[in-house]
Image (cartoon, rainbow, N blue to C red):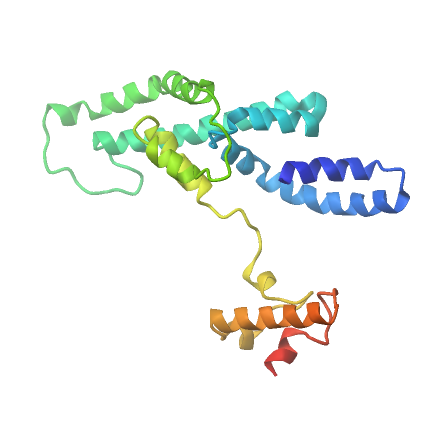
Length: 238
């Protein structure tokens, strides 16, 4: 959906309609700010969706970036590998009983296995790149899962956890993260208003009731201006 908006805005920016193009240029400038911050995260999430994988990124990036699409696709591919590398190292260190950063608990025993922990870490680090590539390739090269309206992506990864133990952890964290830059103040403000101490002190149910009431009143009277002071939240509270 975000990629479709990107493509549509780009088309409107070159429209022969001067008004449409001028508005689109201003909108796209704001859109590009958010795109630059979250496009890679969105692409990684798409790759972790078995219905799309790299194919969706390649499809949209070729339309968005044109001749430079391959460079941007490589950036996304490198980001996935780097993220997988971080998860893989942490997972292996836990499995082998190696100390993670911040873990300063002393060892209670010292035997032959303890002496070889350094070697195990060295062996893991020196062979990591080859193992990561083959593991990712296995997932990406498998057929794309058919799309359906009742598909549950988190459940799919739960079922396939034994086959992709590290990728499933990545999917759980990446796909479970809300993709929003909306602050609490913006969520409950009207126009350019910010939450004052009175609004902050309200519980969530009261805030939701006030916002819904304001929206219903505005909709009933045909007031489409969100910054209208007539039904501003402070007046409702009063």
